Length: 240
Ligand code: 13P
Image (cartoon, rainbow, N blue to C red; front, side):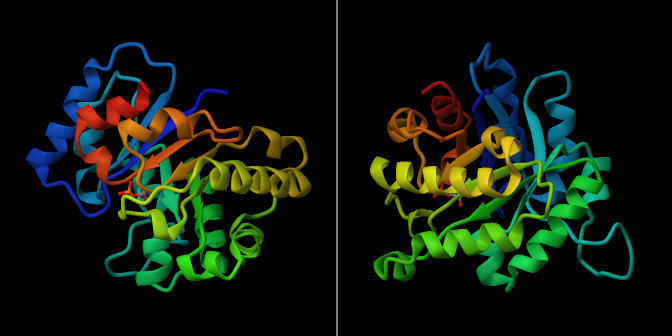
């Protein structure tokens, strides 16, 4: 299974910046890993046009549970798909925290994404306080149980909240333990399909630490925030 290097641009990327990040990806050459960029919704169609004909996929950062309707400001999975997206990030900790997204809501969004033909990337991860209290496995286990619908076919991203945007990366031992735990949970619930699920690691991934993180067993790739805003760094991670 090829690893996936996904860039989450978060709320970054005016037109010129989006083009500056995406255009160099056209010259990436042959890579052993798959690439995905998730620009803000306003730039998805433009980035899809820039990357047309290249193997780099484009995704959204969130979607609504419904296909359409009276939901001012929201964007449906079908709209993302229509704009050319193939993936969507769901349940990112910033949405769980800033928008009060529950596991049940993330599960409903995941079903909507699949129905629209998108591959969901469902994010889980504990806070610093939860890890200090030794609760990281129970927190992540609960998020998996609540956020993943039956028959889940998508990607899981483990992003410890304390490692996001902090420069504080989880140790290889912590990543190994959590990714093994997530794998066991996926296999327990989904059987053989759970063996194949890509489990991305996210949280301060850089070109300098990518090789060691990507070599950890059950790490199926990376979900990259800050370092995905520079094509050179993003490609550095993809080539690590
Ligand atoms: P950073 O790579 O900036 O720590 O962000 C990680 C993240 O939240 C990706 O979704």
